[in-house]
Image (cartoon, rainbow, N blue to C red; front, side, top):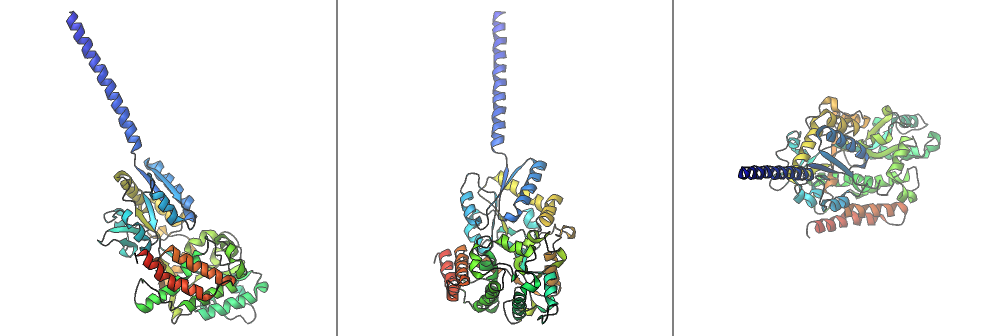
Length: 446
């Protein structure tokens, strides 16, 4: 009997120990699961859409329980921010590159998107950047357009003045006409109760990209057209005189003196246009949210191509393309990669995602999932579509082939020195042509 009691006691002890071990195991599993739960970390390029992305991420987390964090790099700091963040343990699982040149620096971090829903829903391979083996390394998520935004009401008011050089906006279809109109508006600015024909061409980091990159696209584009190429290790500068002419027009017929451009910001330019202080404003479809709801009604917002005096430019359209390409970090855990791909699929297929991209952010996307009801209510987009319907030839975004940020900075510095009267145009030419060759060689191991 005593022996039987000892055996029972021993068995009870074993059961207790077993239960304790199972409990410990469950606790450990729970802890482990918590530490390896899939996550998405998006390093966003566009400051103007930071809040929209954060709200969309919160909706996804609420629906799925998957943590999605959005960090937005400050204007003109994306590349340096990405370099810093990618080196961390909790690196971004989703980031972006600005085109073929940007991809060169980050291709070793890019997951092959070939078999993903994101790629399957892409309207055209023109919106994908591929590796040497055909792998899909990056996919554009927004197609944008830029030109010279103008105030229709102010332009109509100018047309009513004595000896106006045009009788309708449609007559502005070449550089000579644009120049004549802008200079006449500038001479009549007091009569028109405005500050200048053009908004300020600010050259601080929030604004200088409009000129060292977007405006510089035009001479590069036309040279590529002449040469029948889509990239180059050396630029000739064939159209730099045209670049000078349009830059002179901007800075000499503006709301401010050229000597003040170093301190003027992108916000200043947007405000000048939104408040009706200037007729013309170089920017793109993304600028709509910055200028709507103030003194300029939506029906008075139009956009013109950027004319620089090239033969046949009467048939030129707006500058259209993308420098916004998503990349998934292949060095993330497989769980995080899958979570990131699922998030992107939700963004381009769910009603919440499509509404956020098209309506809240105002994007035109290259995905087949965005049907007609997901078109942004943006007069600049409607104008861009009108140019296409008229058969005008869009100007491609060749600035994505510019050799480096250092090249752009060199051109920007030279443009500012020239505008302020502290430098010669020859320095712009050297930064453009000589700088291109130097930066291309540096970027390609030359």
